[in-house]
Length: 118
Image: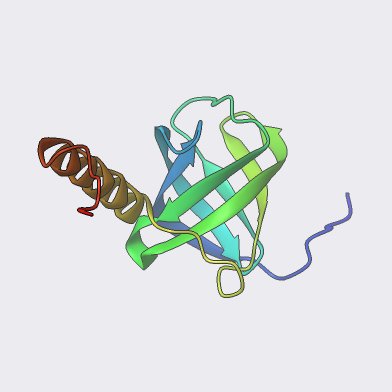
């Protein structure tokens, strides 16, 4: 079988987290190898991911957007956007932004529906 990777991947053993379903669902994984444009991820049990998703590499504080390329048992291969070119907001930041927007909307509601004074 010919290797079709665009760049060399280095072996890793990093904690990862996949976010899918509009970032409302997450599942933990291990990042087994990694390059600037791809990765192999391993899960505790077979996982039914489809298409595209975001994943966060916890130990590196790095988030990427990925697309499923292959699946074998509990492992999947993904191609990723180059993190330096197309960064993805981390899950923690996304959750904080959502909370702040909800808090702002609640406060605006208590202050009269958020309308600006005339």
